[in-house]
Image (tube, rainbow, N blue to C red; front, side):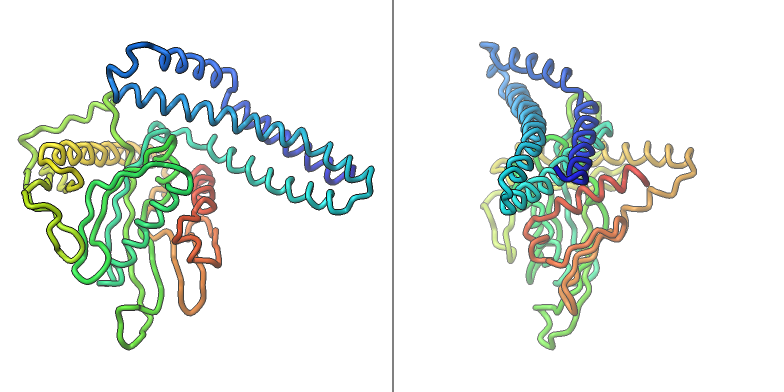
Length: 365
C-alpha cells in the first residue's frame, strides 16, 4: 500500500478512536440497555408523552451506536480494498477506494462535530423564530425563504417540524414565524444559526429590476423540559385572542382561537394559531414563551461568564451570513468564512457545512 495512504488511514483511525472515547461506547451501550428495559415495560404507553421520549431517545442512541460501528467497519475494510486493487493492478478499484476514503473522512468529521455539542441544553429540541427586518417586501420574502430552508434541512434528515405560528406579510412572504425542530441535539446544532441573515439579489418585486439588500433575523431557543423550573406568573401576562389568518389575510377558521401572550416584565410576545382550540393554542404559546425565557436566562448566564473571561465572543450573533444572488452567486458565513457558490442548494436545505463550521468556530472562539 502507498505509504501516504497508509499514514492517512492511520490518522483517520486515530480520529475515530478519539471520537469513540468522547462518546464513551460502554456508557452508550449501558444507556441503550436501560432504555430498552423501559421501552419493554407493559405500562409504557400509560403516559404517551413519556413513552414518546423514551422510544425516541432509544431510537436515536441505537442509531448513534450503529453509525459509529458502520464507520469503524468501513475503515477496517479500506486497507483490504487497497490491497486487492494493488494485487490486481486495478486502477479503477483503487480510484473507488480513494472515493470511499474521502467519503469516510467527511463522515468521521461530521461525527466529530457532534462531540463538540456539550452545552447544558445542546441535546434539546430547537425552537426557531424567523422575523423579516429591513428591506420591505423583499425582507418578508427572504424570511419565508429561510423558514423553508430550515424545514427542508429537517426533512432531509428525517426530523419532524411543528409550526406554531406564521404571521404573513400583506404582499408576499412572512413577517414572522415560529416552529419547532424535533431531533437530538437540534438546539446545539441550530443555535449557531442565530443572528441576522442578509440577502442581495435583483428584487422580483421591483418593476425596474433593481438590486435589493434585505435582512431577516433568526432566533433559536431550547425547548423547555419539566426540570427547567421556568415559572410564569399569570399576573405578568397579557392574553389576547384573535382569528387565525393565512396568506393575504384570509381567515383560517371562524372562531377567535389564535392566542397571543405578552410577558410584561420582558416584553416578549409569542403567539400560536396552529391548533383548533383556544386552550390548545394558549398551551403551545406558553411553551414557546417558556423556551424564550429559558434562552434569555442562558444568554444572561453566558454574558456573566464572558464578562469574567473578558471575552468579546458574545457579539457573534449579529450579522452572520450573506446570501448573494446578484451580481454573482455565493453564500458566505461572516464568522467562519465558510462559503458555497450554490445559493439554490443552500436555500433548499443544504446547510450542514455551515452548521459544522459554525459549531467548530464557536468552540474555538
